[in-house]
Image (cartoon, rainbow over the protein chains, first blue to last red):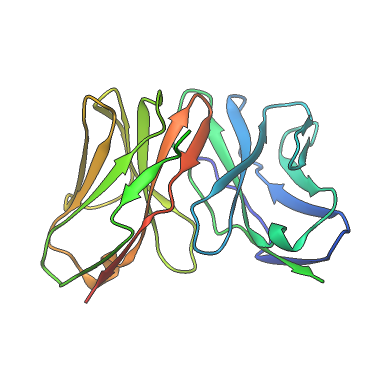
Length: 110
Length: 110
C-alpha cells in the first residue's frame, strides 16, 4: 500500500480558497488518487478522485502534478461546513481497499 | 436511497467478551469493507468482502473475523475483547472505485 504525506493541520478564512497538498512519491502507474473527508462523529465522505488529469466536481477540484508524485485538493470557497479532516489516499485500480493516513485537519475561521 | 447502515450505533462491552457488529450496504453494492478508527487516527483497513468471499485482510489479529451474507450484508466479529479494541468501527460499501461509509459503531471496552 503506497503511502501519502499530508500536513497535520491547516487553517483558512471563510469564503477564501483552500489548497490542501498531498505528497505520494511512491505512487504506481495504476494507483488512483482519492480524497475523502471526515466531519466530527461521522464516517468518511467521498470528495473527489483522479488518475492523471485534473478533475472538477461540485465539491472541489483535484490538481495532479505531471509526474503524479503530488496532488492538491482545492476548495474554491471554504465554508464553516468544510471544517473536517481531509484524507488523501492511493487506491490500486483493481482494489477496493483504502489505506488512510492521519490526514489534514482543516479549520475554517469565520 | 438508503446509505450504508450499521448497527448498533454504540456498544459497551467488558474485556474478554465477544462482539458482533452489523452492516447493510447500499442496494446493488456487492463489496463491503470494515475499518477500525482509534481516536485521533485515520481509519485502518480490517477486511474486504466481495460476493461473500474475503478479498483482503489488514494487519489485525485472528480475534477479528467477518463474513458476508447472500444479501451482501456483513458482520464483523471480535473475540476476547481488549481495552485497545475500543474504537469506531466503520463499514463501507463500494461501487467500482468509490467507497461509501456508514456512520460507524462506537465500541467501548471496559
